[in-house]
Image 1 (cartoon, rainbow, N blue to C red):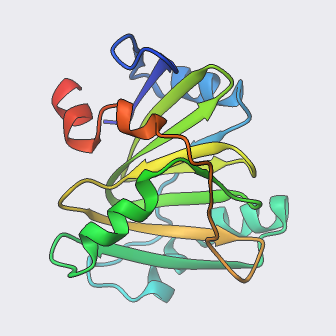
Image 2: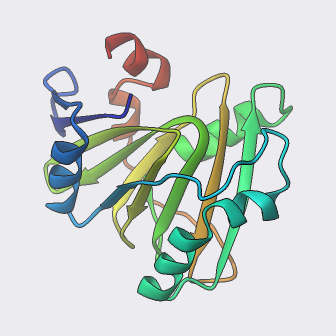
Length: 185
């Protein structure tokens, strides 16, 4: 189940949780973060090729491409048996920004986005069917967990793709990690 928790940025133990999709969408819209739920337009198997996955969500992907001028879309998948899983997790755990949107649609699995906006931290547990669009220059970090298991569609306006600008702030280490968040959920 998708969950949003909003914390004061200095009190990671004092969050308010939202489970209702409409309430989650409303809270995120207030900070200009787009959140949507998508359904596949056609069936595909777990071992489907990226092109088949993109085809299954083509209308939604094309709508976002037109709306924001995205130039490319791809499909990434990460499983716990990936030899680089721990290294990749660390790469995303530090607070950072991007000069471009960060758009992820969860085709399978789950991941935990943290958005640091003004004096609050928004923790959004995204699961299968969830789309999040983090605006450019929004401070955030992502935790996929120690045993990642997800497949996502990513959209980019810049062909260079994912380029992080780390803030140097250690705030991410003060908030629950993926496993702690799931245990509290």
